[in-house]
Length: 74
Image (tube, rainbow, N blue to C red; front, side, top):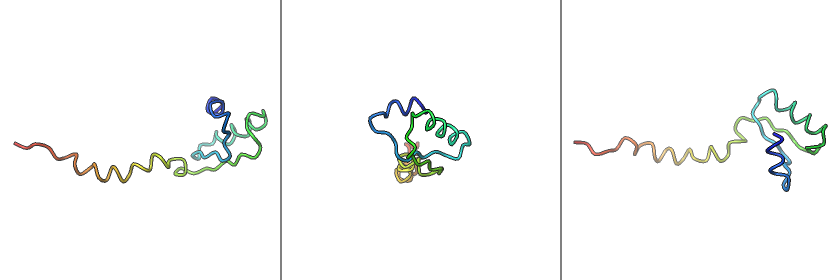
């Protein structure tokens, strides 16, 4: 988490979206206490909000999947 924040130091996150792993809220609170993260940061826990890019390829998979079985048959 510290490494990700240091890479994004020019654009600090306002909402941080994570899955429901129990260690994330503890890490975020610790970073806020140390001053490495703003107190205004909103922590959202959602399994799916963080996967916008990964979920985007679902339509592509529906197109590609039927063609995977096609091949030259003898």
